[in-house]
Amino acid sequence: TQPIIIDTDPGIDDAVAIAFALFAPQVDVRLITTVAGNVGLDKTTCNALRLLTYFEQHVPVARGASEPLIEPFIDASDIHGKTGMEGFDFPEPDQSLLLKDGAIEAMRTVIMESEKPVIIMPIGPLTNVALLLKMYPSVKHNIERIVLMGGSTARGNRGVMSEFNIATDPEAAKIVFASGVPLVMAPLDVGLKALVLPEDSAKLPAMGKTGRMAYDLFKKYRGGSFNTGLKMYDPCAIACILNPSLFTFADTYVDVELNQGLTRGCTVVDLKGYLNKPANVSVAVDVDSQAFRTWFLESMNGCI
Ligand code: BDR
Ligand code: CA
Image (cartoon, rainbow, N blue to C red; front, side, top):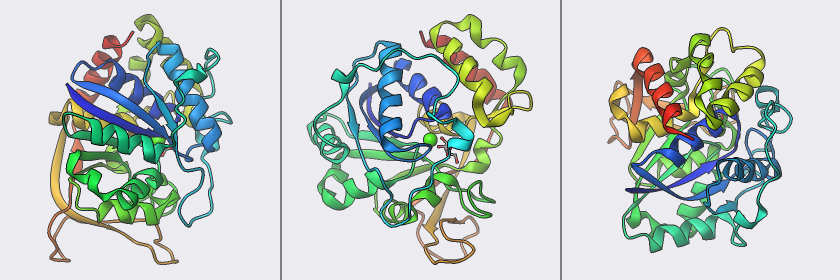
């Protein structure tokens, strides 16, 4: 099995991605690290612990960055609710899963001690991953790749051109994109096509613990998009690992705009090669929406 670290800010779509990873036989979740994003760090950490407690999974959790490197922190509780995972009654979190080490040290230990190169799957702002790569560049040798949800090849959802995870910490994203580590990116515009339709959601309550949880969370997600289709952004990242044939990929040069202006925090995805730079990212540029829905329900069925 493939060792994997999930770096996350749960988050309703994060919760689904985490569940799929925990119950997929192909990957072994060695560590979950938390970051400020959809809501503040105390809440995202509590949510990661609540998910693991609910799923009865003994995966260690480490607290990461409570603020972006330079940007002031602005959350997305308008989308995910005040707690970040509003709508479901979770058990009290098992605090014994929380490591004393912070996220950077914990990631370093897991990566350096792994018998096999590790995949890092960031599905929140990239603050922790950037700090890891800057503090301990030697970990790069034992990172298989970084498979992230973030950025956009088109328009944004936080700004006109910027996607939430990248715009929350653009400097961190710049560090990760320039790191030389093999990168796979599931951008916003692919997530927009990775929809779970109401007839899919209707099947969830009968699918066991995870399905019941997802159904209740989905009813609260993004103020009523339950009926028009729920965008499964973060599950696209785990889908890129577990079932890459759902996507079309393009090897592309990607950089992040840092200037203070209209486009700060936007990913510049050079699909046509204007910049003449070598590709640093395998970008998911399309998804088979129908096949994604089937995969989503199959994955949910594979969960407890
Ligand atoms: C990303 O932002 C968050 O709200 C989601 O969890 C996802 O990681 C989508 O832009
Ligand atoms: Ca997220």
